[in-house]
Length: 76
Image (cartoon, rainbow, N blue to C red; front, side, top):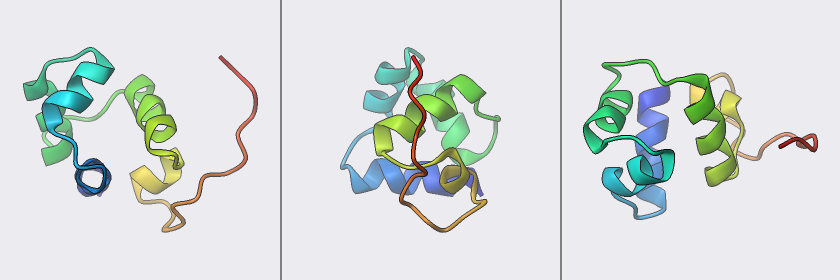
């Protein structure tokens, strides 16, 4: 289910796959595989995307429908 949420979040920001891939430091074709559900997204990218989109990893993973993130702890 997360792959649909990745696409929806990206489209809500009017961004291209190539722009998100560049932010993550990967090729567009790799990111495309995440959005289509052909490849599992690494945890480090999931965390970066949740911070970028201002939501929780649980929302992206489909574990909650609450888009508002939990209160974050201070960490680097």
